[in-house]
Amino acid sequence: MSNPVSALNGASFQGFASIREIGPVGMITLRAKGVMGLDKAVKAVVGTKLPAQRRIEVNGDRACGWMSPDEYLLILPYAEVRDALASLAKALAGEHHLAVDVSDARAVFRVEGDKADQVLAKLSPVDFATLEPGELRRTRTAQVAAAMWSQDGGFTVVCFRSVAGYVMGLLTHSAQPGSELA
Image 1: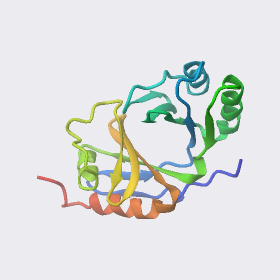
Image 2 (image 1 turned 45 degrees about the horizontal axis):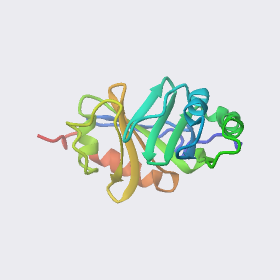
Image 3 (image 1 turned 135 degrees about the vertical axis):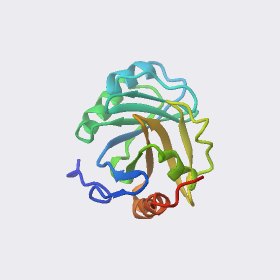
């Protein structure tokens, strides 16, 4: 595994909400459906059950998010990805699945503060007033793909690393003091 480097070197911004890049974060895309032992394999790696549709199960710095009917996003400490992949391969041996390290292909942001939802509401077609704790949304932030969920009084946003600078710019512009929604 490469030396961990965050996409934007921990960039941050303080406006009417706090924006910060929180990388590097370990991430595994796991594709599997109807696979025997999938729930046990995920529990062994991140300590959570398989999430229901459009949900994320969080266990400290580990999580499992539902991404599509046969796709999950496993989140864990960056340094543990290699061992997690080996654990998944062993647990799911002989079963049709795909587990891939996507850690270095993603950027992760935190948007925090009393008005954090306003920052994202300007950028994404999501009704944040109805976004429940533990609900994961795959959507877009302006014109790029993103996944987001509410956690610990703020929001976590995941996007492709190739557009991290663009997303940081969107978030900081949206959080400019004086631009709060009514």
